[in-house]
Length: 410
Ligand SMILES: *Cc1c(COP(=O)(O)O)cnc(C)c1O
Image (cartoon, rainbow, N blue to C red; front, top):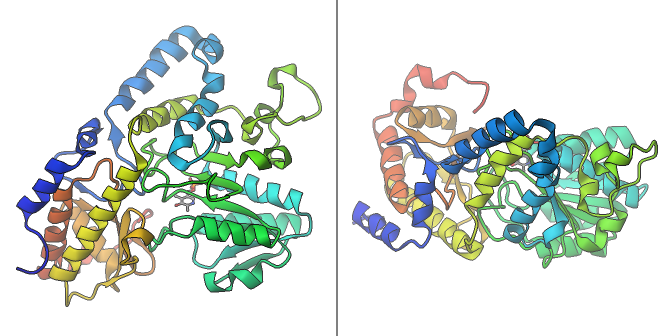
C-alpha cells in the first residue's frame, strides 16, 4: 500500500462520475492515453457531420444565400452566446473572431486608446504570444511595456493603461485571483485584460462577477473547437461604449452592408469583429461547445481537481527518486486542469511516453505537462498514466537517442 488507490478504485470513481457520459461523445483512438486536451481538445463525434453539412448542404447547395438562410453572419455572436454562461459573462458580451493573439492585440490597444499615455503591464514568464503581442503593440504606439514578477504588480501599475494576465498559467497550471487582480488594476486606473485559454471549459470562470474589463481565449483547447479554431473576445457590458478595436474592419461596423466610407463601430460586442468569419471553423467550434450544453461548470471544476489531485498522489507515491518535482500548486483550488512536473530530461521523457501511447507535452526548458480535460478524461486514465510514467522511468526507455531529437512542435 503506497497511498495511491488501485485500478478498481479508479474505475469505481468513474462509475460515480456525473460527467462520465461525456467521454463517449468524443472519437478517441483506442488505447491512447490522451492527456493533452489542454493543447488540442479531442474530436467530438458531432463535429464531422456538422462540418460536412455546412460544406455540402450550406456552401454546396445554398451558396451565398447561406449568409442569411443559415445565419452564417450571426454565427460569431451565436457562438459567443453559447460560451458566455461557461465563463460567467452576460449573453451579448462575447463574440468569436480571429485568434487569441489578435484579440489580445485588440483589447490591449483598446485599453491604450482609453488611457492615452499609459503603460502596458504583464508578468514575466506568462504565455509567450501574450508578451510578444504586447511588445509589438508597445513598439507601434510607444506605450512602455513593464514585465514584472507577480509580487511587483502593485508598483508597476502606476500610470498603467492595461494589466494583461493569463487566468491559469500555461506552465504551472496555477489559477490567479481574478477578482483581486482586476480590483487592483481598477484601483490604479488600469483596465484588466484576462486570457482564459487555459481556464475556459476546465474550471469556473466568473468574468462579470470578478470585475474583469476584457478577456480573450482560445477555442481549440478545453472547448474542443478543432485545430486553429476561432478565438473569442469579451468586453464587460459597462465598458463596451468605450471599447474601440484598432482593427476596425467592416464586420465590426454598425452597418457592414451600408458600404460607408467612414467606420462607425457596431453598438454591440460585434465591434470586436474585424473581417469575414471563418464559417467552417466556427461550425466545428459550435459542435465542440455543444458538449457543454446542460453541464454545470462547478461539476467540471470539481472533476478537474479530483483528477489532478489523484495524479499528484500517484506521482508522489510511485515516482519518487526519478528526479521529478511538482510545478503545479498542491492546493486543489489554486490549480487548473493540468499537472506540470519539472525534469531535466523532460523532452525525452515526453517523447518516450508518446511512443508508449501516452500523450502529454513538453514546455522548454524542463516542464512535462499533462492536461486532464474533465469532459474526456476518466479516473482510470489517471491510474494508467501513473503506471505508464512509472514504467518509462523504471525501464529508462526515455534514454534511447531517438527520444532526444527535437521536433518543430513539442
Ligand atoms: C494557447 C494560448 C494562446 C494561443 O494563441 P493563438 O493566437 O491561438 O496561437 C494564447 N494565449 C494563451 C495563454 C494560450 O494558452
